[in-house]
Length: 91
Image (cartoon, rainbow, N blue to C red):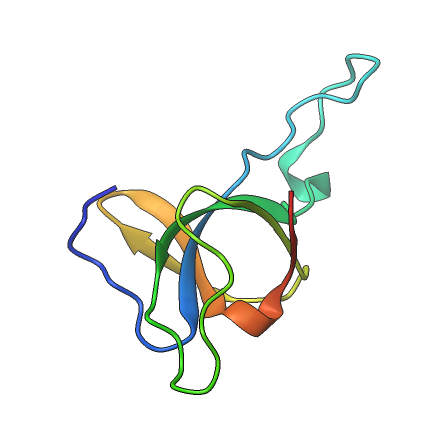
């Protein structure tokens, strides 16, 4: 990931975890049945707001809501950008 993108204010850039291709028993999941990942890694963090400092940092593994964030493509990779408040927790 290029260091050229910097989120503003309380936003974070997340690289979603890879989508599962098979079930635990080895059944291949078709594209139409794949679920959007709910976990990812923080790639970039904004500076936060004056009265709310950021609690996540680059490299944190996080859990977020199914419909959280906006997908963006940077250098051929898909990322999510969302507010820190859309992040449920850190692993």
